[in-house]
Image (cartoon, rainbow, N blue to C red; front, top):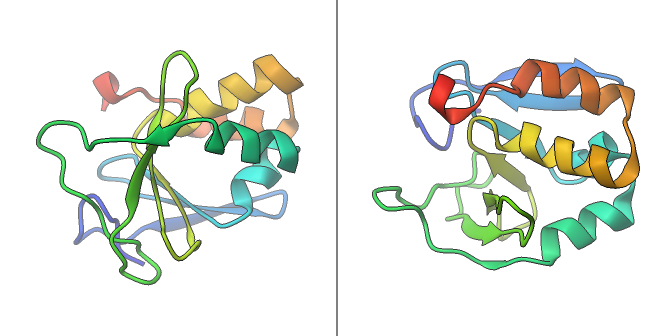
Length: 135
């Protein structure tokens, strides 16, 4: 599977506790298949609420819309209403979600503050916690 940001880079798969995360070593982005964020957070209802309380978002200046690495459909930009807001890419076919560098860690931090800590999210925050400024 190719990185939707870099296009030529191949995503590597990491698996931990039944959750497989696809990761780009070049841009540090993360692809989660449908349902995997719910597994990471450990609460499906809270995850759905978190992802649907936002609104459609504009791509940041200079960023083109990305294609889903699964079905190649043009993904939509969505935003959470959390502080800070997180803009993520969502496959319109429901294949999954794309997070740029540091965004997954921000989501997992928010989930930890709201729902408590989980072993899987703690592990992944350590792995993917690098911010955009550090990349």
